Length: 505
Image 1 (spheres, rainbow, N blue to C red):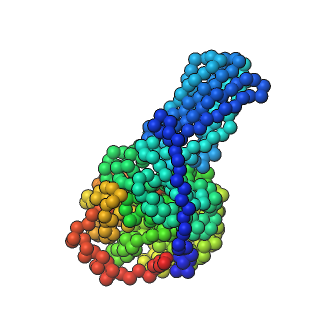
Image 2: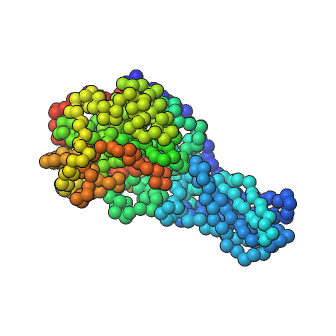
Image 3: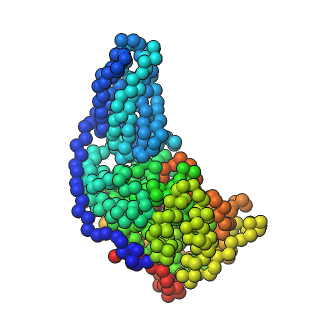
């Protein structure tokens, strides 16, 4: 395992590019097109697009013709999406038209993250059916609240604002290291652009995230979010854990390119495990969480869980198990088999059959071989027709970090002092297994229902579907532990010695 983890590269010299932004109506990004048709006189005199993020983007066009113009539309390709979307300008029919179109992005279903590459062109048609299309243009959908600069190397660009250039360079270095390590390991295309937008504090980041529940926003501090379909990443740069967050989230984009198919996405246990395996700045909190789960008989049926559990206390255990089993798969069977597994899955084979085809064993056998290595009891799936256990409510608990990143409310500005590394969760005695919640983000007080699925339910080809959302995982901030919690690591470490550990550097 150590020889596999040792592939990580150190020392990256970054190239820096300061981008001068043209401002139109107080916002960035503009483009003009002058063109004339072949069999008619449709002429686009001028056109432009301006970011008004977070509300949306505004398109303008001025076109004339020797016949009345009947229809003008703009067509977009967002990020790496191949499918285009379009909208029509509103105007009165005439032989000369000036019109604006506002494309909203601050509503569910139409959200586009800042920093995304937008490719667009205009199409014009007159009353006699003559048509004309402009050449495709491209612009970056920057957050219009700030003036952005960039550092760039290869396919990765990190946009930042304010006097934080060095932080952006550090994020860039971590991103390049991650791409260089995980791209070849997983067989992903590393030439496609990846855009990173770095925010300086929690308030800035909150206003850039997709429209969501006010409860989620109050309870979680999102430190990073990947939009895998778009090749766009948002990261909170105001903390010492920013490099780990960026590396983790960027690996989700690589996972998507290597393994997601058009009909299903990589199940979360493999996606999150790979994301942490690729993390160039891993912490120890997941190791402690795994030891805690092992010592208190709290291990989850990891490969039977296509999505994250809903209980915050189980989430950190899930991450620890996911990282550990991926380390085992790569160390025991080699990187080539992991690369082949993703390739087979990407072709449309379900995960059970993919594992059987590549490793020659079933998914449950794979998990039990890993359990044997770490000294855990064998997992025996329940009978499919067995009765569901009665859900047992848990006492209210606070959120734990999915990564050992900084991100408490104390990190309010880029000058904040780094917060301490998080401690492991305090164990909560549970008399019997707690059912897995639906695939929602962590809740403070999960309320089980009689229909809740048991945590040990076997996977039945229910990998996380491609619901249209391009987000990878969302990394929330951590809770602040009290002094009484500091005894927990000593208790856990004295109870169990974990056999499977990674040493990257």
